[in-house]
Length: 177
Image (cartoon, rainbow, N blue to C red):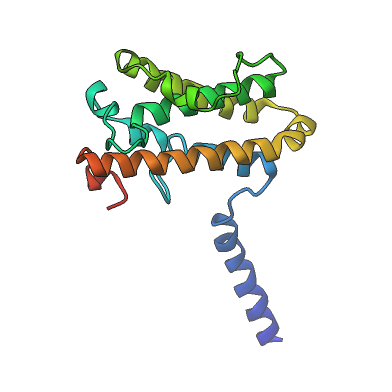
């Protein structure tokens, strides 16, 4: 009897330990975690807000001269596509698009770098708010689009860091040594 009592007591004492480490794994929580990891949550990789922080307009315009994009062009591209996706999620008509993806990079203007950074932060915030408030049916129907947004953002944020490293404009203390 003592052994059974001891096992039960140990079990009951250990339950709170397991409960504390559990993160919510419902669809909304997972989608929000993905979006936040590419926006402003520093976890496994550098998020967008860190990737664009501290760059001057001149630095944001730098390219390697081999046809690759600048950080500013990459940020402008993300703003364009994330706004397109957000409009669709909201049931709104997205901005007109010619079908030429190069334009989503090439329309970057160094004079508007600070505005581009603000727009990037805002559209990422708005996507998170949409996920927070969407009803379950809309959330389920949009889950694949949202995971694609996060994947697309992570891909181009990685490119931003690569460009910054090539340029000598990245401090490894900010992540990714």
